[in-house]
Image (cartoon, rainbow, N blue to C red; front, side, top):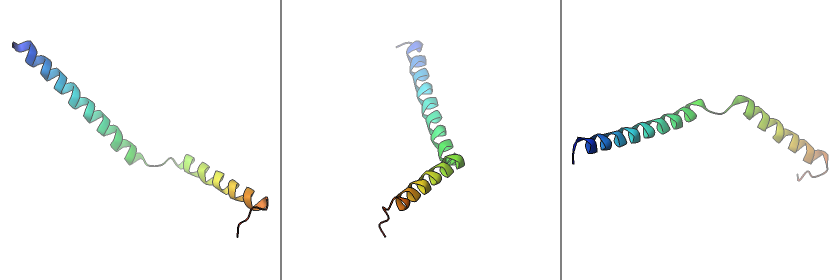
Length: 62
């Protein structure tokens, strides 16, 4: 085994570490960012319209 083998192993190890770091950084960034306020308000609006539609159509269960 000459020096090119060890350089190749080193390159593979560095590429693996960089890949793991990048994916970890992306996961932490997604957790830190939290929910999108526009998307959250749109979901609330859809739920509100759905409930109004049920009660207005005579499907009120209470």
